[in-house]
Length: 629
Ligand code: ADP
Image (cartoon, rainbow, N blue to C red; front, top):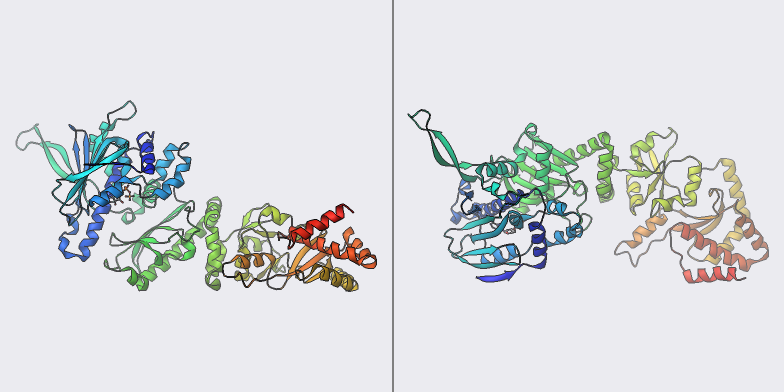
């Protein structure tokens, strides 16, 4: 036998498992059964395409044997088995090391949680056992191997005389303590109820020899003991059961176990559809985004079953990108078992199913938005960005489906509102939906234009995600209203008289503005007075299609390095601010200082708008010169 040490992170998990105060130790059985079932599936798939396997669907079995004398539970299967190398790799390391690292951060504080969070797998056997032996022979191999460990430092691997293919896991139970009665797991009724509770839907029979007694024929009052093989699970998958038979708990534990989540889902959609497409589906909206959700590593997709048999684990064709967060499965009678991945893409039946699945998800979200706002807001915080992308992608192809699911922060009490809620409050002749952009809500509130708009009692949508503005530009119009950036030069709430007045003032001082623009240089398009700034001295406005935030976003996209877009900037100066009079007098008396002040005011306006100053060194020199004058 070769002696080996556990890899360090396996050891950490093992220590945690062994020393855990976790109260649901009983789940070890579910984990071991689920591995056996996977191994049966693997060989079953092989048998579909390889007739030499020579096994029929109902030849595949999981067997449990209880041995009270030796204190062992054995779970065996006639599945694919493992080669020596597989045995070493699979049971010597944790497959999901990445997720373990991620979750181990709160290891100390939340011992209980980490076990719940982590699909604990094979090692959970050590929660109840002080020694685990695995005998296995890979299908088609003439050698069998054994793996033995006490779950402390390491394990031993050697050859075994297991005669047939498959795997048996022999768990030697720990001694009972005051808190934990491990002997309970040697009780046949206990095992029957655990299988019913956790593994009922496993689609292979889980059999055990069960002792019963029966009246002896012809001898009244006499009973005899006998043993019979019993199948402990109903093998009906949860999605094939009636809703009325299932509790929230059933749905939630199935979700957590199948989709490796530690939190209950936000919503469950269980449907049975008949018609053009006939299928059953069980879909879940998770309560939080997986840690890699917004990265390219995340793979969307639903499990696809045909008549209860898994065809593929992640069928991407069943989910549009904007609903990629949905987990779950579809089981259809209409699909062939041997369908390949390539064929799936073109399968018209699958397309029909995908369409109905999409509708179901959408209507579930609409229902949540209407009936459980708090829940919906939680959902939106996690996945709203994805819905917004959906609106904006493909030139807005799907915007009409999605626009009513969006939420934006409103300047009124900073509450989240839908576009419908926003427009419902507007007067009939009010044709605009106002918004402002910034890195944070606080920065938006600091915008001079924001103050001014608030002082006119306008409700403003506050956009803090860099592409929010693109999203509303793609939506274009909502209930006959247009989206207006309050920092756009066209945004003007002045009366006709006020407009005329400012126009006159601007034409009177056009010479001064030219002078100022020249001093500032290419960065600015023009300079002018405004009456829109409440108490603030300066601000930046933009003209044309590109706003400041769009400039920032477009230029940060990869591939745009050599082709930077530029917003057309206007430096606006508050005509009622004392600084306006100062400029006017400098224009008459001191052009040199006018040039310096123009640069300073432009830098100030940039900073206020959240844009960096082109030449910060020059800026600080000018400020210091001013200080020391
Ligand atoms: P998981 O099942 O989540 O991958 P486990 O720790 O439970 O993680 O198991 C690790 C690996 O060991 C499995 O992925 C599988 O390859 C292998 N394995 C476990 N039990 C069996 C079994 N009964 N038959 C064949 N392979 C098995």
